[in-house]
Length: 267
Image 1 (tube, rainbow, N blue to C red):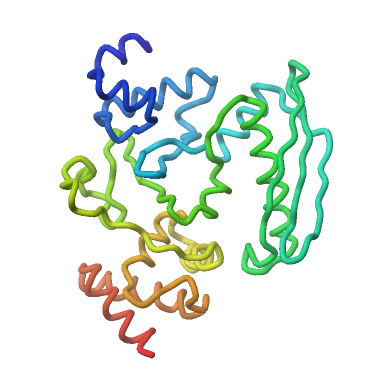
Image 2 (cartoon, one colour):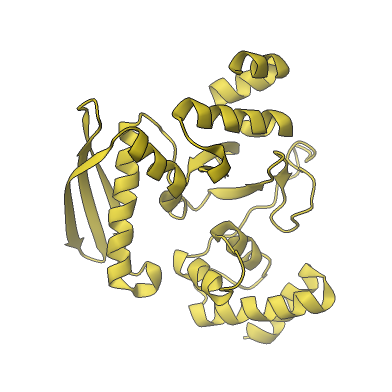
């Protein structure tokens, strides 16, 4: 299968993927095949969507989701030998030791702010432990991918919505065509603004009946000209709720964002 896929790719695309790690240079069909090949090489079920896409350092690449690390722990028989949780200042630091079925051992750490998870200390502790376990799993499996718990700590990282057909979807419009290769080199691409994990989670919690993921919440908040990472969480949520109401009324996202800015963030 790998040889067949490589024949379908032109030489420049092969070079970008194998050397540069840039999946944006592939066609949608090639991206789908590459995704499936990656899953098959690791023994993962592609139907569970164990990976998602991220734009990092101007390159489109994969990052591991919970489904990936859970499956890998089972496949590779990764066992946790010791967990050391330390309370240091305003952070929780977790050191995890473990081994795989071959007997190989490794150690990984994670650092999580106590203010994460909306200030819920118990949840922040669990997040720190989970993050360390996932980092250990990926390390023991010899994979250099980021885990989804790490993405929120990288300001320049932008999650990218890719359809089941391999099309890169614009975050503001789920029906948009892939704009990456159409964008002139001298014209900067739209970047999401940075918002805190607490703001992102608060927006997700504000719409419990909708499947809103972190990158959707970040894209929504980035429509505002006034919201920043320093905006109080209650105002952030009020803005998001107002935006949603106005967006449904007019169908115009830009107009809805401007109305929410003027009515919720007037001062």
